[in-house]
Length: 343
Image 1 (tube, helix red, strand yellow):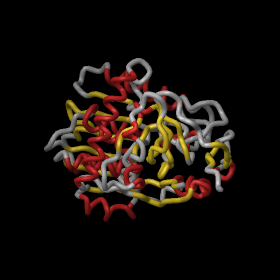
Image 2 (image 1 turned 120 degrees about the horizontal axis):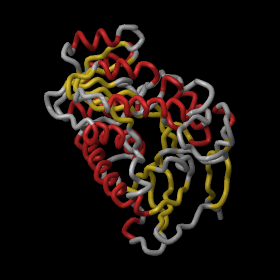
Image 3 (image 1 turned 135 degrees about the horizontal axis):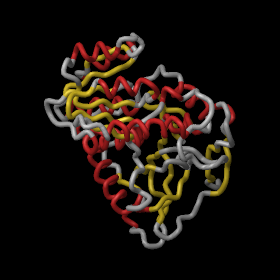
Image 4 (image 1 turned 180 degrees about the vertical axis):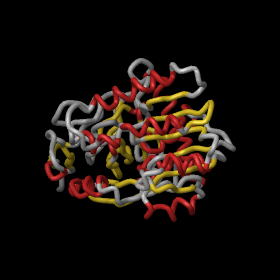
């Protein structure tokens, strides 16, 4: 009789993708209030790319199991958890720990995936979808008739963000390499080649009065252009530091520098606002409120997926054991959508 075992990917330190380790062990048992989820899909995001470099803000000490989110089926429930969750497909935002075949989670942290939404589909919309939804609707509060600029419009977050913005009735300008422009045009996005060297001038030509919101995952010095492109009353939402991905030194400094700029800009009396978005904001001191907001917003994202307002963009589905290949592909900058790891 075969015994089911747990497979996990461990990040032992600052390593190349091939340095990730595959470990095996027993499947965990759920503690009180927990569920054990058999992973069906987990993702490779910018967070894991930075973690392997030791440059992700507030990452845990090495070694640890990466994996920012996952989708899977509830295999077992602990005391105090209703049996109705057994066999249900759920999604969870984990920050770490998702790159494993079986994961124990607090039942309060899982969100049911609607019928008809596949595991890989749902996976593309967990951290990417919740990030896009909350930036668009909770921070920028975009309404019909507004104009927004999305940097990296073909990426994991960007591809969902542009679709949610279009569904809200906004006009969308998106930066991407030229190979992705036809796909963006088909959605209704006006694309700009970010390598052209005149992005700010192109945006000003399209929106002479400025844009109502900029969503910037790049960071670095380019964030200043993003701020300057805002119309009066506009909102800048920064949510990453991709420009510093390969830099050496502290991974905290680029974030701290961004936070300083955000504070300074918000002190200016010009009616514009800037945010550095952190999906985990509020969890430490208002866990129940954080969970309720996450459940509400992720349910909205899944509903948009069901309705076809957003389309799941799966760049590739790669077995967990081939994680190095998946990481290399995600870091190549050649794919549209999300690289998904499967059991």
